[in-house]
Length: 139
Image (cartoon, rainbow, N blue to C red):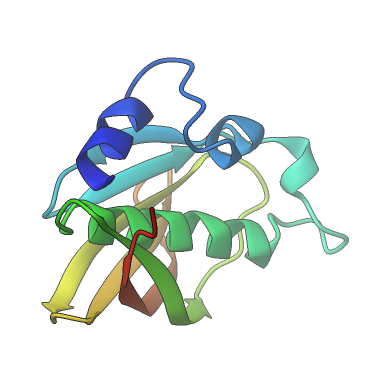
């Protein structure tokens, strides 16, 4: 699944991950070493305090980290997030956000991953860390 899925994810108009077109996520880079996802700004992402909702940033971070894990798995395997932490460093009121994720440690059953969330100018908005479990795909 990982290779076929990741190849399809790069195609224009992809439908293998419906969340990406729903939110507007763009795949900038997708390799085993690094995944970069960009999310163009939408007014819908603003919460009551006038800034982009933390949940939007958390979703982008989780997706970037999950996809770097997927890029490191063998066929017949998939992954699930088992824990995630996110430290918000700076609010953002408008503009695209970018998540850049990479592996910290690749175990046989659990992988540790980190992500940075940045604005369009590369200013750090948030830091994320997560653990992902390797799961067998059931036929």
